Length: 171
Image (cartoon, rainbow, N blue to C red; front, top):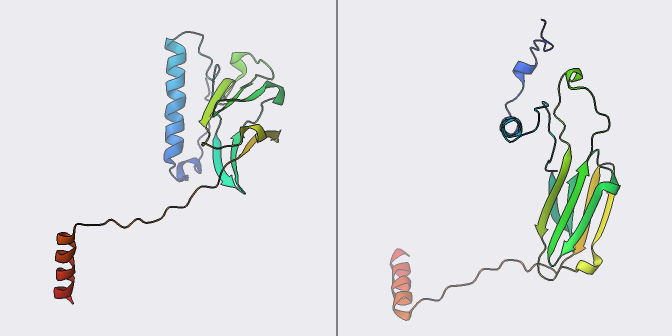
C-alpha cells in the first residue's frame, strides 16, 4: 500500500512555530478524548471548537472580533447577561463524506460558546453586532479609562531625614 504523504524537502526547512506544536498537541488530545469518551473516531473534530477572538478599545468602544469562517449567521447568538457578553454558535458540516474518502481532516465543526465580562459602566443598551466575510464584530461603548499616574509614597520624618542626609553625603 502506497502512502498518500509525499516527502517534501521544503517542509523540513520551515521555521519552528511553538504555537503549531501546541495546536498539534491539542488536536491529539481531542482525538484521544474522542476515542476514550465515546463516539467513533473520525480523524477530525466534531462536537465543539473554540473560535479565535481579539478585543481592543477604539474610539470609546470596546470591540470584540471573532473569526467564524463557515458559520452561517443564522447559527449565531450574541446575548448579554448582566455584564457578561455571550457569543454562541455552530459550524455545521456542509456535506457528509464517507470517512474513507478523507485524506486529511483538520477543520473543527460543532457548537461553540465564548463569554467575556464587560467593564463596569459599559453601555449595554448600545451594544451592536455585525457579521461579514466570516468575521463577527461586537462593539459596546465603554467609559474612558483613567490613565495610570504615579503616587508618591510619604515616609516618616526620621526616614526622610536619613534619606536626605545620605543624598547630601553622596553629592
